[in-house]
Image: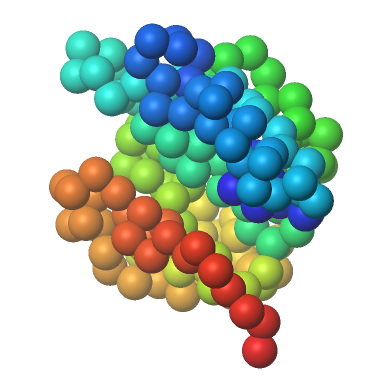
Length: 164
């Protein structure tokens, strides 16, 4: 996850079951030597025995930047405090979601630009909060895609962008 020129990487708390671990962080450091790579311990699990409203699959299920100075945050998705995020985003610019909202992938939106995001109309509370921060919210009924295990960011996953 790119934020203010840094790369934040969600690292699973259980090395035996983690999708992303220390090796991935080192790999990213090698590929992006000019960037600060920041590992953040997340409560990751795709084990059906774990409560899906308490565990996240990836960092973007618990944290989603909106522009350079705002973000959506599911506090309980982290092991301990998500300190690096709290150091970069002011508390009054964090839009917090509950376990139920995280389960329905509210943080998993698509940022078209620093000021425009694509979100679902059923995320009414969060969309209103984004608009209050001056973000243009384009609502697209897309919730059925969650049955496949992802939402906007997962199905668009921009790997490379150029600014026009």
